Length: 287
Length: 259
Image (tube, rainbow over all chains, first blue to last red; front, side):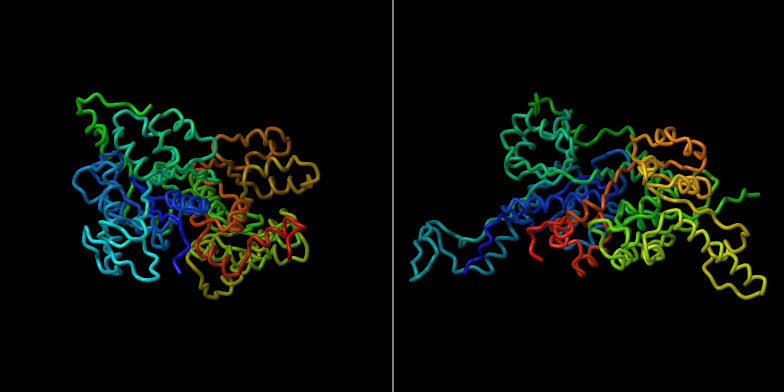
């Protein structure tokens, strides 16, 4: 008897500075998973946290090795969310789309590796497969790999601020945004009264793919931004219960986040802005 | 010579049904604020869950609420749970809980003085030892949300003489979210205005409004509350099957539910 679970498998990918990771970042995953499960159409099988590389040159961004370590501490207590350091170990800054493509490729090749292991004999191209008695498998021409469940969908998980950053000139390439929402999809956590819906309405590109943009409302006013955490730390204030205990301990032990670290990359232009501003091509705008 | 600070204990009363990260955050915020005034040294935090006799709908038994708070506070070195209020025969007014804890602290001070007088060795943690050198009992203040100030004006909710005792003899530390204006509640009350020097207003700039009501709702629907309450409390809730859909339905008085 085949598995009656026809739900689409989903992997959630969150990109960002995670400078530092907070309870709010972790909550995004939980909210997204609950939401997708409640639709009855999806099954979230994995969450990936991909901290941005140092080459992003954002102000106050401390070294990737610290940010990755803190994220790992933070996800120790999770049985489905993990940290991936591929993006952070690249020498140059990578567009979000490239990170999505990388992880999608990784999922695809691991899926085919798994299915090859458990495959029926491979059929060569051009040959018809003999239909066995009582076989439920349809005859397929040109089939190299037996029919298996599809590759999980990889969706970008983010807050509404990321969605709205699509509109900031030179921060995103329009063709990247298009590919993200058409080939992958977005799960965007918003808080009540947010303008996300309006933003989608006002953009032809986003509107066209709105079925692939899931807006999830956070039922708690959760404003634990990394900026505020860093500010509190500079002022000697407690960040307990806003970040996981292990992250707080790590920050304290290593004395991260001082007025000096806040000045990191001060005056430096953000990598994507530098990259796209150089381009002479007349870029289309999102809205 | 360093000016000595006034030693202070924070007491929070409430249902803690269940305890959340926000409850514990209130203590951290209050302590930071009081320390930054330069006048206080917060030496202890006490969580005092209300007794089952309070009769609030959906209140799970005190035994569970105390256990969950204990689990949540395992990693805190200065906040702990006190079961006294929950063990009382009937519901105890807040002022009486304050009086109890203040008397307890006096009693403990007296005891330590006796020990010193008799030259008995005091084997305690450093904090306790240092505090035993100070002849004055620490101040005890009620830690709460600023909406408590608003409830003081609700008819028949508080006795006038209790409010007076709370703000005069003890004091309040009120946490409010950025953008709200708790000062107006003080201005609207002559009593509060008179003792406003004893009402410390603390602004929470990092909004994290985890209402226990929402937590219970989420749990009853099988939604995740991870990172809103400690993992140890989530495990406890699952193991003891509290805040389930069935129990929440019963609490709402749903006549169609089968028991």
